[in-house]
Length: 398
Image 1: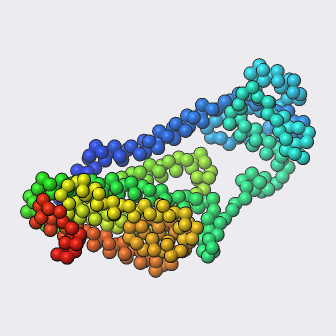
Image 2: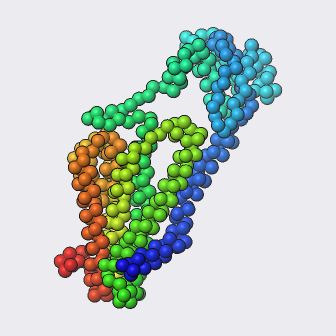
């Protein structure tokens, strides 16, 4: 057991201390942070605090002092009333206001509002005036009616079988499996590549022949594979941690983000599927590395393992439309597609317990088989130095 842990710790430390791993670990969060900062700066550049004027010919502004802005970042734009257009134009020419809104006498009949401005009015000024006008139109209504009209209808979409419903509060539960799936695809390709390259290099320079004098092939490959799993989980956990921090910060400023709900069952299902999926793919990549003689050849072979992982992403629309179709059920049971398909279906329907159980049993059995297969391929590959080993030989002579 001590030998296994030595292999595990050596492989884990070797991978996580690589410059390429550290760059990938920090690169994506920094890129997202840069894009978010760029977006914020773009909004800030368009922001103008110059007042905006209005002429109320319709008599709908009954409470000029109403609080109309809840923006946490910017001060509300001052709204200045004018009684005639000539005075408003003079103020505009003097630069006192960005522009002037004119509510015509027929506004309540046809909704006509004119905007006079020498140049485009800032988005925050337009938003503030729209909120100001809506609140005045609702003046005198009860708090409940006002809140209902301002927030709009709360639409809940029921699945065909009536077992699940989607609402604005469950958007994150739908996005979560897609986001985790995408991160999983990125991480498994990166960390699996580390393992694949390491096995091929050790085989090419015959380092493995020295290592196996003190460690059995099964201990070596299982140690390498589980170390690769922990490398992948480290990367995935770090990225999800950045996402969680981003959501917490966004929730402080956005009520919509704050009210989002994440179902514990969906989260546990994702974790239960991602772990064996990592082990399975890593084991298959390790076996591939032990079978081939060149790194370039191994990279061509692993495509048949990684390509099926993208299938649920290509078929996401039919899965969402009919989550209980034979296609969706089949993808839920196939071990290379179930890690993404099952959580995605769970967001739109109640999956029968036997399908979840069958999917978990199959993927855990495949993960264990992949570990044994990697050890077998490595043991046979050492006896065939310089020669390519085929899958048929691995299964026949195992």
